[in-house]
Length: 368
Image (cartoon, rainbow, N blue to C red; front, side, top):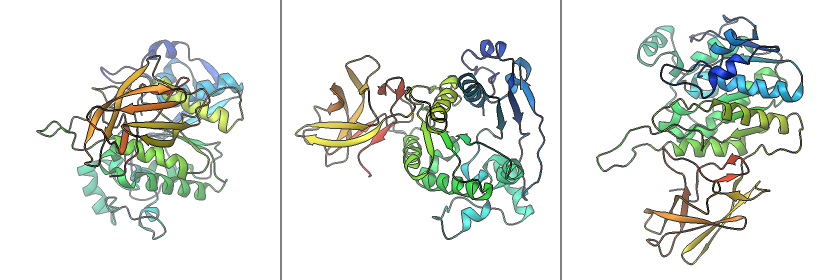
């Protein structure tokens, strides 16, 4: 995970100013030294530190903004354990038996090393962060049983090219963690990956792999994982950088989910709307939404160009979208009899569909 200091040429927006104002003895930070292991470990390397410019500079930006808002609103001490590894695969954080057991769907691309020799060979090719169970063994297993309130999760980019199994995989991982902790269905809040131009383009100009399918799987997982919530980041991406700068949006949206769903705070919006009923009326598609008490809008604009529609030939064409009270209406002059609609369903897009200050996830009505 990106630290508050950012990376070379990739700064966290307003990061240094927030670091400057970070001294707070009621926020404690623990960063796990990253690395993998073939066998489960019993301890990790790391030290608890008070929040101050020196410690916060090196700490996970998303996690810090999350904890800062919780402390500010709840007025209680907050302890944050950052166990992360940039570019990691979801499989790397799973107990190997969850990947192989018959009670879960098969994850055929998640090869678990059977011997330490095989592990070492895979490590040379893929590194620890992409080897099934390597990070679970080294960075998660030592914490099982420690007193925690919940988990925040920001991952998915490494799985975008094999997205179809991700919702099942994430649900399996969360169930496994909860079973091993044995404290019930603790909160699990996660960030949807932000749009980014992955740059894998064919000669015809088409994306060979569309990361919107991974975002869709994360959208599905919110309904299959009990006591969970997803922070949508359609407005927080960076076209030419996989490390978005607006880490405060990710951390604070995750914190709002926790404040409302876990701590019972009323009076603020925390959950992005989800797609409701979709109707087709001649050449126009009408889209309704759930969880949209204040109705959706296009960032103050009357229309949006982030929609596409397709007819029976399954070819999508750019469409114009406009608002009709709580509904979004979509139409393309090139499709007289539409059967499906998509919003922001591309690698890179600047999301413009919101409810209050929360963006709506990219979505599609087809399942082709």
